[in-house]
Image (cartoon, rainbow, N blue to C red):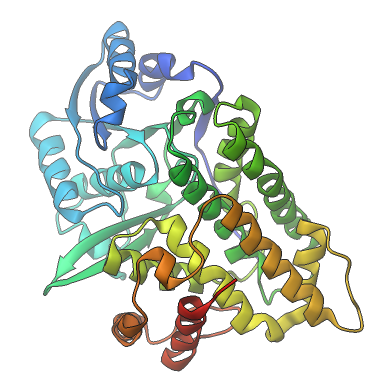
Length: 395
């Protein structure tokens, strides 16, 4: 077990109707003027923004709106939000949406308090020291951004879309308002993509070279088993509140780092997928459904017993101790079958990606970082191998 520092001071408000308390919650956290940041028209059409604004009005808190966040959030809107907050004297940003909206809000909060370009934080070497107050009303269970220290933004540089993350304590939201009922109207594909993202956040931590981490292994396995049980339920009945509630809390547990504090983590599959979603603008969870099992196949022999343990403890597959590779492969097959049943893509063709683009994708990855991952350190040829597995997979 590795040494660690763990601090997640987010104030969580979970359950039916908690979005109606947004005003009082903002007041509790010292808000005087709030920027409500959101995505497309769903927050307006559903009446959620009206509820939030009515609650802010009741609490005597002034507010303004900035919509337009897209999946794979763009730097252009972050710059607009920074200038708007400075001009209007905003002290709190309230993200109403999913991970993309929350990440855009995180970048705005950090940028307002910084004299330079917020993108410095995403290129590395500069760490935010101060930030506006950040809260969120979560509408999608997926990214776990409501409790994490991560923030990923897209920016076009010299004609190439760069998707870069920033991990720091300033990114951890001050409060999160989480009503599972707000997720019941999501399209099935968006629900499935979110569920995949949750599972992958856990697996990036689970497949580790660190020994004797049985407690956090158990936490990881518990979250994964919950998702295995809840995905069929929520896909069958989108209004199953208990399934939605379990998945929403799993999204937080999967990425607030409680499942990975004591270990070396991988994140190679996420970095590969970030190139896919930057290049094709595909859903993050869909890209992970294609990449992660391919990565698992390519690295399995590095620690085949950990993959056999995954198959056994998550999917209930008996361990073949004489041939653990069989158990490991069965676990990967079970994972793919679960995601296929939810309507997720499993190869390049189903994702809308092209095999001939692999050299460009790899070049973009290794140009900046040279290698990816930690469980197995991947150079350009190894990343190519993973992407070729992802491209060529067939049932």
